[in-house]
Image 1 (tube, one colour):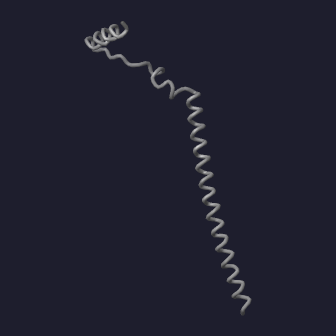
Image 2 (cartoon, rainbow, N blue to C red):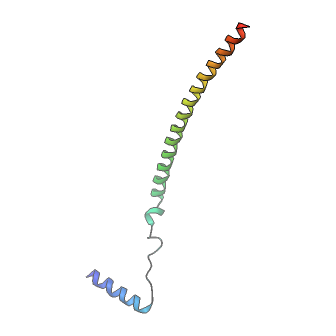
Image 3 (cartoon, rainbow, N blue to C red):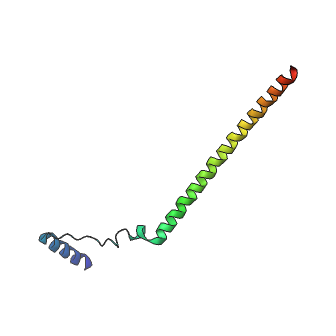
Length: 84
C-alpha cells in the first residue's frame, strides 16, 4: 500500500516538475550527531596516540644504536690518546 502511494506521489511530482529532496537535518544525521562526532574523534585520537608511540619506540631504538656507536668511538679515541 505504501509502495503504491509513493509511486503515485513520485509520478505526480515528476509530472509537475517538482523534485522531492530529503530534509537536510535528516540526511546524514548520523554523521552530524554529537555522539558520532565524539566517537569519531576518540578513534582518531587513539590512532594518533598509537602511531606516536610506535614512532617514539623506533626513535628510542635508533638512539640506543647511535649511543652504542658513540660509546665505541669514544673508547677508540681514548685508547688512541692514551697511546701517545
